[in-house]
Image (cartoon, rainbow, N blue to C red; front, top):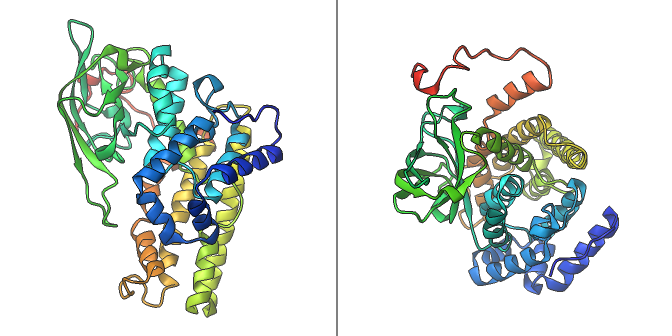
Length: 410
């Protein structure tokens, strides 16, 4: 049953959400979150029965998708209200996991904006309840930063459906996804941005092969996906044929905003680093202490900027400020990852494996560059900021209007 938040101000909304969580979140989950028991929270995250039941209840309440329209299972909240809900969920570690980011933050809003009524009925509720996982099939070996250079082909069949061939890479959680957001070239006779179509791909379709990629941190969050004669019904096309780039802009704007940190101001990773430094004695080093405090300030500034940006979204569409926040978040993540190892007595290489805090510090260090790459590299964000915020001249593409099939390769 959707939570009734009609007419509530932000403070009243926060109180309403807090009361609902108090009544519904399993007691052992709430206790682990409030005491900061990282090991207990990790055990809960691995318990499929507990998490599946909770995500279904959370989705049924509308809190998992608070910004979606009410008719699609959301609460119809503006961005500032969504920020309040996200902050309350984060406080208790009760929100959807990062593996659901593509579905909840990218697929859902894109389908809400571009989907047919049938697509909205078919995809949105299972997504909200945590029944479907999604991945993003955008980047390719030869089309990462220059996404519009993608070469995966979708060819229309005589019956109006499509057959897809190609390869995608850096697709987060693709090995466990039920569906994928797929961009494919449908008319190479058009300029590169104008001959792309957007599809909702069933990842269980024959011809879809996923190969997980081993990362520096030992995890396999990313995968490469091979598509060989994959049949896609035309009913799974999102938006108009050859107009997929416009649909993708909705997804990418949501991605940059979603990868810019939580929309709330309060204790963050720098606070935890300071506490750990006091425990290990590293806080006594004045130079290290100064760097931690600088990271603390940067994190608070990013949090406050994110809150302001979410409030502004109630009045306009996402813009280039998402690139500013994503760039800042990627830079901060790398800084915090490095600092995490420096507050440990054994640094990054000589810690006791039984010491969970030191193990987490090593993981933070090895994962520190992810956000500067995922969702558009920091270099691409700097280009966007330079062109759309600072008004610098855009690099001219001499082949912008040349049919894709006639563009020089290499």
